[in-house]
Length: 602
Image (tube, rainbow, N blue to C red; front, side, top):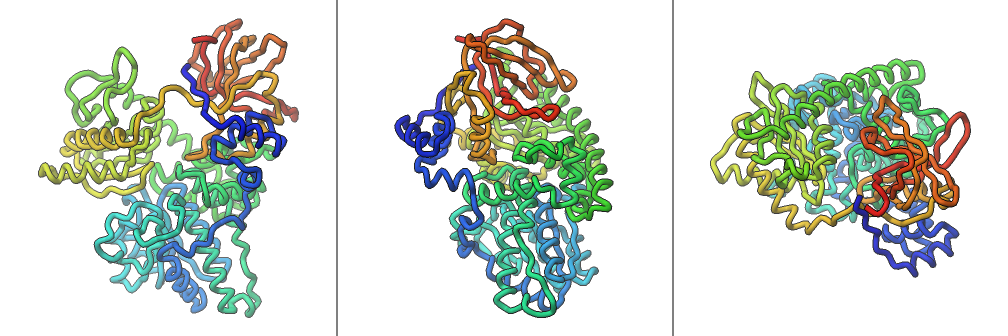
């Protein structure tokens, strides 16, 4: 286990520890995250809604707000359409909940994976048949130009609320309003919001616009509290792997508190079927590992409507709807494990690549066990497109390379792919460059592509996959080189003695959350600990240890997914870990969540 201690100004960390009365390790973590003044630390640890910057520079927002407010005042039927992932479904649920709270009639739908990504001409026609005059899309629409044209032909005005990369600024977008921070004319200082966060801004701005029009002062109307929507914002933001910084961090932190209250019946029921006890805190880890996979599961298998129905459900129906998501998630997991197994087998396969093997012409090195090229591109006949994104994420975790995983329809020969990244490679830029390279070489077959820096999707014909893989490897190699060398070793925030690992330290570090992109969970190091017990739990998937130091301090430790690691009682180890608090039979104790370990001195 190679580790690198983060470099921070020790004097600044010492002053911060004294001023805040926190442990030195906690102060080191704050300084490493750019927090060096006590007043800034307070805002970091306890974010407030008032700290959100006004969205005055968010291009498209004023026109969208005006048109939605007009529709509400006139009693027009509003359509809401969301994509099939968590961000899309939560955006649709948020907008629907808010619009209905104003008294508006709302028709809502979410995408079906078998109909393709995003807003479609068929969805536009369906909204027209339901009598909608305006449709708001969530987490899609930026690239769905054909569908928007179809909506316009039906007399529908379309408002797009989306955060995916805007393909071109050469011509005006056909929607009535495109609310997207990636517009070239958008001056809002933070571009990294998920669509559900943008939807929250839309709802808050519409509420204010209606207040200015005197809408809430007559007819017995009650002005809705938009803070009640923050649980949905936290769900979609964490699940979509956007940076948990700036506005996202504020919205997510407050949204997690709302999630913990279990005020939304569907969320309360889903937490219950996920095995999250009522007395357990809901943090970003709970969302990422318990809630998000279950909300994503129906959309991965086909239709995302069950997830939307759960988020909009009342107390009477929530339990049954949550159970349906649990069953879908079990089915998804079985499919995912099969595809992952096949992918790993094919990545280790030898010579001639074809559409069913790794396609970038490179293999796993027998000597190092590492991937020999800048990107992984792999395709499989009949791989369900709903799980290729998860498989791509797992390949990134294993090989530390951008991964592009494609499921090919054996009948049509059309492949639908998902990509995930690491090492600073911008996936949208890689796809754009690869597409240009294919075009220059006269290769056809790459269809639509879209997404953002960290996650992307695309369609491609079977015959174009091999040259596409070569083009992607070249573009990813160039982008990785431009992002600078990847540091060697696991980075840790501080080194501590085992006795320092207690509930207070765990609570202080938890206050630095929520953790995710651009705000990673703190990682501490302790050395020369003796392993006094070893057992495997969770069908042998997880490793549970008891360790102690030479002063008799004893701590429990658990390594999720580390069940295959070999360690013997009596071994002396160095361990990288996150301090947490474990609750068992009503008793709380400090526990160490293991990231890695190795024999001391190695």
